Amino acid sequence: AQTVTQSQPEMSVQEAETVTLSCTYDTSESDYYLFWYKQPPSRQMILVIRQEAYKQQNATENRFSVNFQKAAKSFSLKISDSQLGDAAMYFCAYRNPYGQNFVFGPGTRLSVLP
Amino acid sequence: ETGVTQTPRHLVMGMTNKKSLKCEQHLGHNAMYWYKQSAKKPLELMFVYSLEERVENNSVPSRFSPECPNSSHLFLHLHTLQPEDSALYLCASSQDWGPSSYEQYFGPGTRLTVT
Image (cartoon, each protein chain N blue to C red):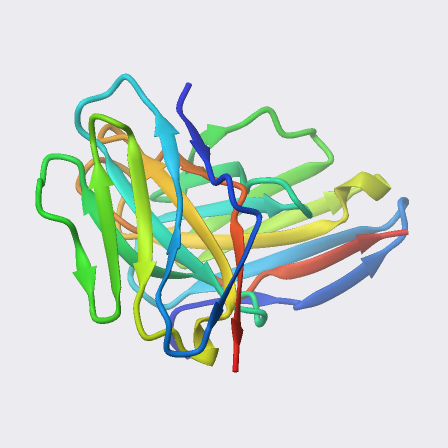
């Protein structure tokens, strides 16, 4: 069974600085999808960024980028120029290519300090 | 309204009560999901519906009973719950259930407290 691990339960970053959230996963599949979701204190989970495993290029969405290391099964999220609105729980998620079997990590709570 | 909505946002119920959670998606999606989010635990997928047919049921106790009358609405009927069922219940939808669909869109959740 696939598992997703986020080893940092909590992180903090100074406003305007850069922070990296870690995620590792375990799978025997060669093709799959990885996601970072953000859950602000209001609780609505929203998609931040996604990566297809067959793509070597790291995904980027404005201030958010990933470092996808397929061999190491690592999928970290980098947030540049952190803003107060980035404070939230961040969940790493894995999906196999055959269905909607999403597996979520336990989450990392990010605080942004003014 | 846009996106995925859930009602009520907060619910307190006794162990002998019967209540229902409602989810509605306004995205034209064909698949809907119920998740349970407990403190300090990963999200647990409970049920998946595709085109109103249940396709996944992850060993959820029978005191939780889902219903999907159409592709836009999803209910979770609750009966004889236990205090450990207190959690945030999230509804999500996606375009389809299958390899052609990528992300899920989540509702704001219902905070359930069982007393």
